Each structure stands twice: as C-alpha cells, then as structure tokens.
Image (cartoon, rainbow, N blue to C red; front, side, top):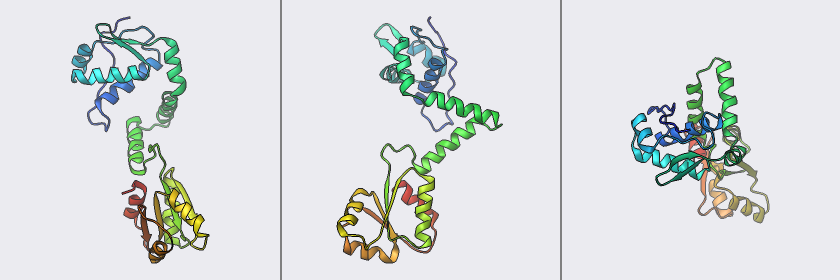
Length: 225
C-alpha cells in the first residue's frame, strides 16, 4: 500500500527534536500494525510538506529507521516498511513500545495527564541521569556522620549509580583499589586532607561535606559537575 500521508503530530514545545518525534511515532504505527510490511511511506517531499518541516529532517528520520531495520529505502524507490521477520526481530529486542503502552494505559486509567507524566519522567531523568549508559561510581570514605550519610542515602534512592563505602583504616591496597574504581570520592570535609595524604586520588573528583545538607551540592554530585 502507498501512503500519501501519515497521522503524525509535531509539538515544538516538547523537549524532543522533530526528527525524534517523527521517528518514534512511525515506530508505534509499525508496532501497532497501522503500517504493515511492504507498505510505502510518503515521499520525503510529501511528508515534509504535510508536517511543515525541512525535507532533510524527513530524510534523516527515514535513514535512522532504515538503520534500525524497520524501513527499506532505495534511490527512486521511496521508503518501504521492512518485512515481518525484520520487524519481529526489532520488536523482540526493543521492549520499550510495549512498556510505554502499559504505562500510558495505567496513567489514563488513573486519571492523570499523559503528556505531563511523560514530561515529568524526562525532567526526572535530566536531573538524576538514569539514562547514562555507564553508571556513575561513588565511593564514600569514612562517612559515618549524619550529614555524609544524607548524601549517600539520597544518591542510592534517587539514582542507579554504584555506591560503595570504605573506611580509612582498611588496608591501603584495598583502599586504593576502591578509589581507582570510583568516579567521585566523597568524605567528611575535615578528613579530606587526610585522605589526600594517605592515598592517591589524583584525577578523581573529591568532595568534602560538612554538617549542612546542601541540595545544590547533592545535585553537583549526581550530575558529576
């Protein structure tokens, strides 16, 4: 089947690129069988005109979908939905579509606004960096006081970072290994000089905390600034 248009919507107020919005909506149309194997999508000119976007944006989007294995493109042939085996293989490896469908249904059934919920999710991820492919690794040294424990607990609860603790009286080789594996060192402020003198923390970001529970400092730790 040849489609001259698609039921796509662009919202420039969303913190997502136009290409990302188009690509993911086409993925949903394919996953929900609104677009089937061998169907032809609108030409880049047609879809660009329909959505009032640049032709290059559509070309880039189609190219990304081809790289994902969902489209077949060729010069003079247009963009065609891939065969069913390719689609099944993609959907088997990409569980996000079924997951987000369940989330959206739960949000609607609970009476919440879907867009506000998803935007809150984006904002939460921006703050706490859950999408980092490589998890941040924190090492808390001699953090037994309440203020230091505050940062440790908050990082554990609000991120998926790897959080380890160690005391200064541990063997030096064990302490040095733990430091080598960490991205950030956190200790009590009055122990920071001692830590620097007893072990090598060169090229590691080291933070000393006081009795104050500083939210700005917590976010500095989480975001790695």
